[in-house]
Length: 384
Ligand code: ACO
Image 1: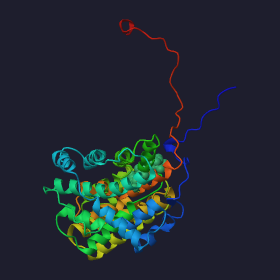
Image 2: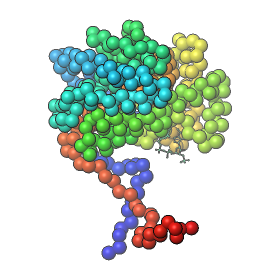
Image 3: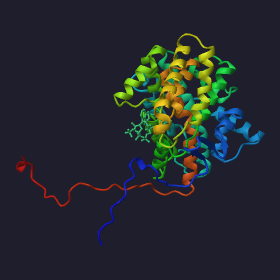
Image 4: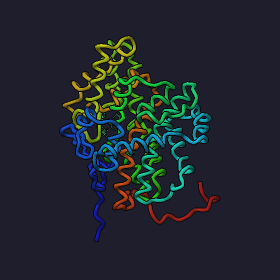
C-alpha cells in the first residue's frame, strides 16, 4: 500500500497537542481568560501574586492561602551569592535574556530537591522560580546600570520588591500598580512558542529548572517576547510623531514586518494591548517630552496599521507594541523588558508544566523527509 502523503502544518498552526484548563485565548472575539477569569477582571481586581496562585492552583486563594503564598514568594526572593557574582561578571557581555537564562539554570545548585519530580516539590520549585526570576531580572537591570545587588525587603509585595531591587529605592504606589498590571498581562498565554518550548523540554521528564530555562531561550526572539524592545526601537527611529505615517508606509512598502503587530491566534485586537494602551492614552494627554512623543508615535502608528491591515489582513496590535513606552514611563531600561516578560510568564510556564506532568507524554512530532536514501559511501580520496 502506498504511503499516504503527510499533511504538513507549518509552524504547527492549528494543531492541538493537549487539553488544558489554564488559559483560553479567543482569537476571534479578542478575549483572554486565566482559569476562567477574564484578563480585564483580573487586572481590575487582583495582583500578580494572587494571579500566580490562581494559575498554579486552579482557584483563587482564601485570605490565609494568599498570605501564605505571598510569604513563600518573599522568603524565596534572595539570590545566592554565586548567582549575583555571575550576573555581575557577565551581564555586560551578553544579552540580558542570556544572563537570565544562565542564572535560572544555576538555581538547581542551591535546591536540595532540584531533581525530585513529585507534584509537591514541583509546586515549591514553581514558587521559587517565580520569585527568583524576578530578583534575577531586577539584578540584571541594576548591575547593567552600574548599581550593586540590592538585598530584597521581605515586607514588600512581589512587584514592589522587583522595583526596589532594580532601583535601590522604594517605588511609589502608582508605579507598582502599573507594573503589576504589566506582570499580570504577561503571566500566561496558553501554548505560545515559549510555553510549548517549556512543555517540550518537560515532556522528556527533565526537571522544572531545565524546562523553564528552555522557555527563556524561546522567549528571547523578536517574533515572540523580544518584540517589545524591537517595537520601541522603531518608535525611537521614527523620532518625531509627524514622521510616523511615512516611516510605517515605507517599511510596509519594503515588505518589513512592524514589530508589535500581528498574532498567530488573535485575528482582532489583543485584549492585553487594549489594557496597556490605556496607559499610553494617559501619557499622550498628561505626559511631557520623550514620553508624550513616544505615546503619540505609538498611537499614530497603531491607527495607520489598523486602517491598512486590521480588517483586510487581520493584523492588529499585540501586547508588545504598547509595552515599551509604558515601561519607559516607569523608568525601566529597554534591555530588561523581555526579562520582565520572562519573570511574569514564569507563572504560566510552571502552571503548564504542573498540569502537563499529570498526564505526561513525550512530545515528538514528525518531519516529512525530502532527502535521498541508500547513497553509497565514497572514500575521501575519491571525492571531487
Ligand atoms: N507587520 C506587517 N505585516 C505583517 C505583520 C506585521 N507585524 N505580521 C504579519 N504580517 C503579514 C505578513 O507579512 C504576511 O503577509 P503576506 O500574506 O502578504 O505574506 C501575513 O501578514 C501573515 O503573516 P505571518 O508571519 O505568516 O503570520 P504568522 O501567524 O506566522 O505571524 C507573528 C504571527 C509571527 C506574530 C507575526 O505577525 C509577526 O512576525 N509579528 C511581528 C512580531 C511580533 O510582534 N511578535 C510578538 C507576537 S505577541 C507575543 O509573542 C507576546
